[in-house]
Image 1 (cartoon, rainbow, N blue to C red):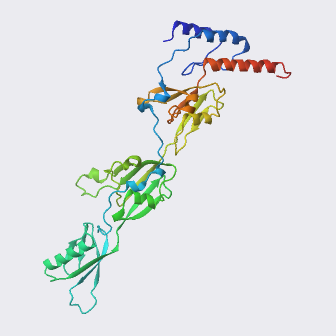
Image 2: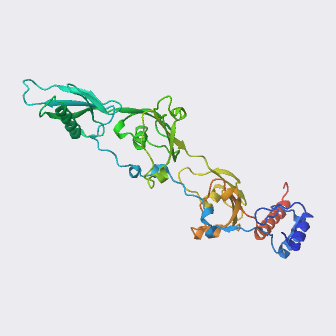
Image 3: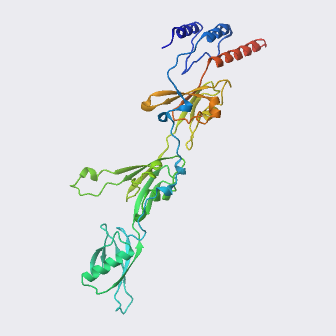
Amino acid sequence: MHSIHDQNFTQSLSAFGDVPFSTGCSWPSAPTAPRIVLIGVLILLSAGCHRAQIYQASALPIELTAPPVLNPLNIDFSKLARNQERSETLHSGDVVDVQITTGIEEEEPVVWKVRLDEQGVGDIPIFGPVRLAGLDFTGAGHAIRVEGIQRGKYVAPNVSVSLRERRTIRVTVLGAVAKQGDYNLPAADANLLAALSKAGNLTEEASTIIEIRHPPRRVMAASFPAEANTPRLVTVDLAQAELNQNVDLRIEDGTTVMVRPRAVRFISVIGLVKKSGQFKMPMDRDIRLLEAISLGEGRVLQLADKVHIIRQGPGDVPVVIEASIKAAKTNPKSNIRLADGDVISVEETSMTFVVGMLRDFVRLGFTSGIPGF
């Protein structure tokens, strides 16, 4: 609550016209000459304006600190790689060449082309199905040999297995990537990083948030019908994925990858600056107090040093951060990082008000003696 002295002071100024007040003490920016003497006396007698509690830029609580801008293009994607399966491991849909020799052949042994079905089983000529998915080439050959002997088709065969064709899956990559579209990925190496690489990687407009939308699970029509028709969504924050090894970066057939673009951020610069207005913040880096004032083309008066930064605090409650231009030039902590939506106000004080009045008075007195002004 204002003191009686402050109320009388405000009422006295009101007798000379409206007096705007900002987050600190605000004064009329261009008083006319007849008001100068009396208003100047009132300023000297005034003890200042009552203000609510404010925070200091050099000692800002962590919960009020603006978060740093993370440029996704600077992320080391190699650190996001998970332990991949061995490249020799077989998967459902792979096509392999199988050759079985007994040592008594009179002609060149036949090479059979075998495709692994959805259950990872390959149908081997002569003795039938053998599960091969999850095995490497050597393991697959051993499994075929054992099954051939157990089923009485061979005594001591030699089996060789080699890869003919990898199964591929289809993935759609959208959003802030260089080349949006549909791409084929080897099923064995289908992960987020491979999908982004196919799409030419991220653009400068990309955020760190990526949505991986998998197709509905294949279930029986009578079992969990709601789940069967519901896509599965995994949201990945690239800034945190390196630390969280449990994030699933795998891609399935029919998956859609959406790279969210970064939201455009703005700050406003007002008060004793040459150009008040709203300015777009850089997409890929931080912006700090002194740079914001330079966007306003500098101060109207070099004497103006007091700055108020109005920011949305926790719970969307506005807070006021008091800063000093002089301190910002000498102390990095005072040159605080700005947040989206900040309003930077270079404040009027009693000193800047008096200097501004005197400057306007001198200019008025000088120009009034010149014909035509």
